[in-house]
Length: 108
Image: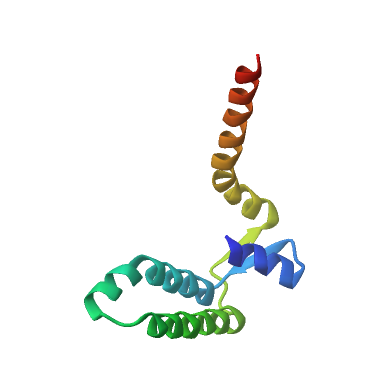
């Protein structure tokens, strides 16, 4: 979602194109975050190697984001990007609301 929101803000457009570079960047980031604990246990690499790998993959993500402009797989309007962010914002909102109710119940 951050890539879509970034595309809207950088391009200053109402529609952002979903391109293969962005899809590859999200897949690469997901694989890195999912399998890093497993790889650390299996390969027994020191922390500095993982930091170097993470920095290198961050550069790859940036390059994929910047050069991956064509072909456009899907056009996403701003409202759809905002709508896709709502499930991620629902959990903190419910937690805040429940805390507020508990606070009111405790003070009453």
